[in-house]
Image (tube, rainbow, N blue to C red; front, side, top):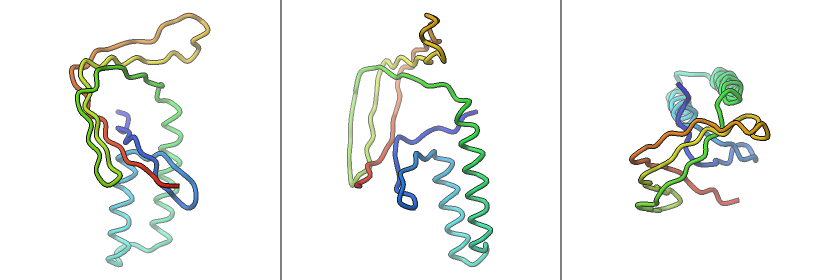
Length: 120
């Protein structure tokens, strides 16, 4: 199952990187273990590198999705935001749209999208 994406971009070592919830949780766990002295900095760096490579490799396998629906609610606080959508249509974008093949489509009753803003 694909890692659910958080619609955010985080500043990482001078560049912007899209992060999944999995990456954010891993970063929090590694940072905590480093701070407690239970994990060496070099080991944490190695884990980050290997995990990042695996996620980038897998990301190429995930199809592009288009979402459409009715905005039911929006909330923003301290750079974090949440959108609630009703009657959402999720469409898989075909790899070769020029061939005229439509992607699969599915209706979802409600969808919550969470993200954050980055000041550059």
